Each structure stands twice: as C-alpha cells, then as structure tokens.
Image 1 (cartoon, rainbow, N blue to C red):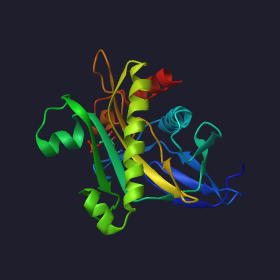
Image 2 (cartoon, rainbow, N blue to C red; image 1 turned 180 degrees about the horizontal axis):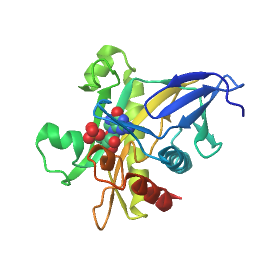
Image 3 (cartoon, rainbow, N blue to C red; image 1 turned 90 degrees about the vertical axis):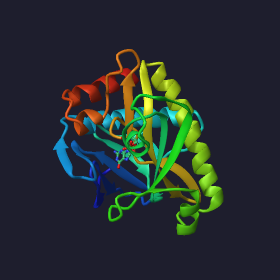
Image 4 (cartoon, helix red, strand yellow; image 1 turned 45 degrees about the vertical axis):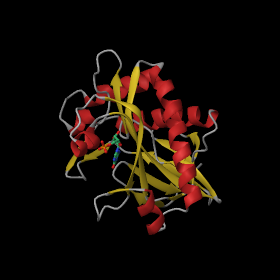
Amino acid sequence: MKKRRKLYEGKAKILYATDEPHLLIQYFKDDATAFDAMKRGVISDKGHCNNQISARLFCVLEKNHIPTHFVKRLGEREMLVKRVKIIPLEVTMRNIVAGGMSKRLGLDEGKKLKQPVLEYHYKSDALHDPLINDDHILVLGIVREKELDLIKEMSFKINKVLRRFFGQRNLELVDFKLEFGRFKKRILLADEISPDTCRLWDKKTKQKLDKDRFRRDLGNVKEAYKEVLKRVL
Ligand code: 5GP
C-alpha cells in the first residue's frame, strides 16, 4: 500500500492518504509532548515501539470482539487503518489513582480504586481538553445517547481485556486514554494504545514504564518503551 498525500500531522502521529479512499496509513513519530505541549522532546525509537505495541493490542482487542480501526501493520513505524471520523472525546479509564485524578481530587498516587473510573475530556486544544460529563456530551451534540452507551460499554470491556493481558505480563494497567471514531455508521476504537497513552507499572517493583518517565524527567524513557514492547510481543 503506497503512502500518498499527508492529511494530518499531530503531536505523535501523521496520517497519510492511500489509493484506497477508506484506508489511511498511520505513521508513528518519535516526537513527544506533555503538559498541553508546553514540554517537547524526542524519544528515540518511540515510533517504532508504539506502532508495534498498538498493533499487538488492537489484535488482542479484535480477538475479544472490540471493533478497531486497525487493519494491519505495514512496517516499523506504520500501520494501515480504516479512515474514521474521530469523535472529539478523550475517554480515560482509571484503575489506580495517578496523574490528573491525583491532582484534581487530592488523592495519593498509587491508591487502588474499588472500581474502574471512567472520565471524559472534550478534545479541544483551544479549551485545553476540559473534563466533561455525560450531559455535557449530549448537550454539545458530540454523540447521541445510544452511541455514548456503546462507547462506555466498549471502554469498560477494553479495560477488562487489557488489564488481564498486561497482568499476565507483570504489568499493572494504572490508567489509559482512548479515542473512538465513526466508520460507515459504526463506532470503532481508533488512535493508538501505547506507553504514550497508558500508565503501566511493573507489578512487583512499581517502576513506571510509560510516558511519565518523560513527563517527570525520570530517565531511561526509551528503555521503558522497549521493555513494554518486549513484554507484549
Ligand atoms: P491524566 O488525566 O492522569 O493526565 O491521564 C490519564 C491517562 O490518559 C494517562 O495514561 C495518560 O497517558 C493518558 N492521556 C490523557 N490525556 C492524554 C493526551 O492528551 N495524550 C496522551 N498521549 N495521553 C493522554
């Protein structure tokens, strides 16, 4: 499949057209940003790791009957995906307190939640991705009620599947962010699932193996992404 015109360039990925109107090539960059793009850097080999990790996780989810935009991996940094229209929502699932939840609610990082917590953020750079609830989503017309129910149901199921998958590899799935898109009247999981979008801690040592190593200048960033790749393959 040949890469054609560049359609969109984001902070961590580029989307290219292909000769097939319903398919795009998603290219993973090494660029990293944090704190609303106030912090910028490069994590060498990140694109390669995230492409492989995402491809593996999308396959696991498809096997568990979660529809995704993933078609196939094309090379080191590229995957073929269905051309979805991204829904402007960041869906966050949390199993353990960390990051935004710790700050917002004054809870200690590392506290296990007695049930998974689902959060929505409105995807808007201009508004800095504000936290919103179900009513805001319906009033803003982001999705209809039935679609929101489906997104919620899919998100809880994804959490179950991924927690089990990572757990078997000695990784704690602390939290993660999902994005969904519309494709031919269906809702598909889109974007990526990687150490850029998940918090992953080693189960025994609690070592952080995700983008928090970049956000918090903890060092060994590239090594953390490689370790996750090694465990998921
Ligand atoms: P928090 O709200 O605690 O900052 O993030 C919760 C989870 O969602 C973390 O795993 C984090 O990596 C992911 N996440 C939230 N917002 C973004 C974002 O804008 N970009 C990326 N790559 N991940 C995000």
